Length: 316
Length: 128
Image (cartoon, rainbow over all chains, first blue to last red; front, top):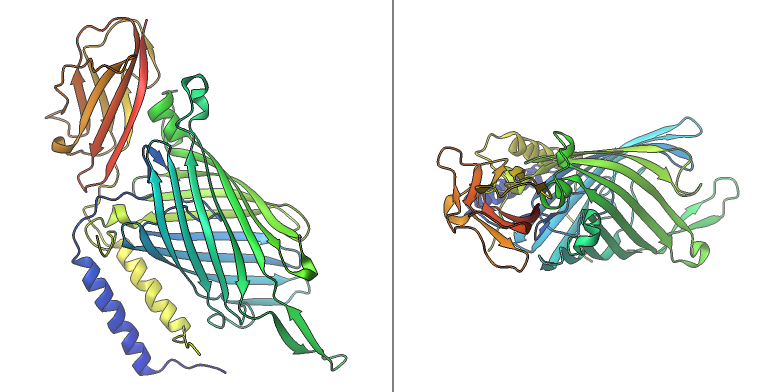
């Protein structure tokens, strides 16, 4: 059913947004830091979700030749802390598909809303642990791009720096790993459609999958500040080398055990208020893509830009 | 059945415009204070005892909540206890040390940036 925005709904949206921003602009300053565990700074990475909750805004440009279409995506993510260790995440993506038959499709993907609780932050061992759930809300995107069903994704997130290694291996201390593990449950097991050639009903299965994604990082910032000043100047002294492994395994009968994913070697530059990153996207098999793609990241630390207003948790 | 408010392109546009406007609004932002360089340098081996240990940060820090200590290899504090933010450079944290014997020393720092964000860290240097 096609939905039309009503004037009352529009007014309600404006009022709600205005009220929310007025409230948070009046909030006091927070001294909680984003992405820190002791002296370890975990940057936001490309496709592996952060192990921490913070106030941040990201734009990720993702371009890859998939199994049957060239895909260009602009992913927009906004995270907002409600409490110092608990927050909400909103994500949306505009997708352009160029299919192998020459046809194209454009539109917004489904709106995603998630909640994340950072339940452990250990400074000595540079460890962050979180749990969260994400809802990819079916029917909120363009029908030619987005799924008509909702997907629910509970997940466990972790981040661990190796700063607690002994002096004998001090050059390994700048290493860190982050990751996420969790299932993705579609709320509808399959989509029925009529085959135009045979007239028969065809059911396309919506599989349950398991996301297992991790990143390996080597922080030149950490090396310079805490291990050994090797004389790196700008911009290298604020760089973090990142390789990501975002993977998904099918858990449903018709595709059980099949993996899709990419390996994304890249680099992130972390400034005081912004982060920029670029990475290659190497498909792990033909189901994941047919050529190397590219990822570009622009990230804003809202908690550093607006520490006394929208960058602070709503409740302390 | 739970019903969601229909999310239209119009709604998305409103939200994205607001976020973009907020991100472009000038603000007295300071962010986390990170060390830029230090003297003695991180991980350095030096020939003689320094008179003081100094760390330059990439933004101004709060004198009341920022500290710098030097410990010897046994964990004993060896600095003079006069850690301070330099009066003429609010991004420079320093502490005086007596003449130190050859050995390994650990510098431990903790700072609060002007916006309230705390960062901390440590590093070692060696006197031959």
